[in-house]
Structure formats: structure tokens, C-alpha cells
Amino acid sequence: MGAAVVGLAGCAASPARPEADFSRAQTLIQSAEQQGAPEFAAADLERARGKLNQAEIVAEQGNGEQAARLAQEAAVDAELAAARAAAAKARKAADELDQSLETLRSEAQRAPR
Image (cartoon, rainbow, N blue to C red; front, side):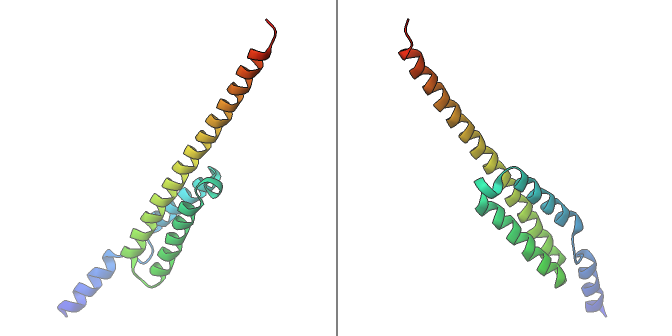
């Protein structure tokens, strides 16, 4: 009977589907998608999606603790994807600005004085 009580306690401590972790991961993945991750951080975004999918499978198997961990990892990967996308967009904008400034300098040097 003691083993049965321990088994039940273990089940109670490990919910089948950690909704808060899943919701957070899904929201962060969607946010990363909107911030340009498919173009600028595709590998990180795919890793986040893959971990969330793994979390779904593990949750269906009844391992809420592992599902929560995978969903949390998916959230971190989505945050990384969003950060890398933002950095890449900033670099692209800076490069475009540098190119525009160089064009203006060239035109200013050719202009009659």
C-alpha cells in the first residue's frame, strides 16, 4: 500500500499537460514568427517547434514533468530565435544605412563647389 500511495503522489505532482508552459512556449513561438525568425533564425525557430511537439507527445504519454521541461526549453529557443531575428534585422538596417551614407558621400564629392 505504501508503494501505491507514493505512486499516486508522484502522479499528482506531475500533471499530464502543463498548460502554462505550453501556452507560454506557443506564444513565444508565434512572437518569434512575427519578428522575422522564419527568415533570420529558422534553425532556432524549428528547434523550438520541435521541442514543443516533443512536449505534446510526452504529455500524452503522461509524463508531465518531462513535458514541462521540453515546453520550457521550447520557450527559451523561441526567445533566442526572436533575439537573433531582431539582431539580424538591426544589422541589415545598419548595413543599408551605411550604404546610403556612402552613396551620399560619393555624390557630395562629385558635386560642383
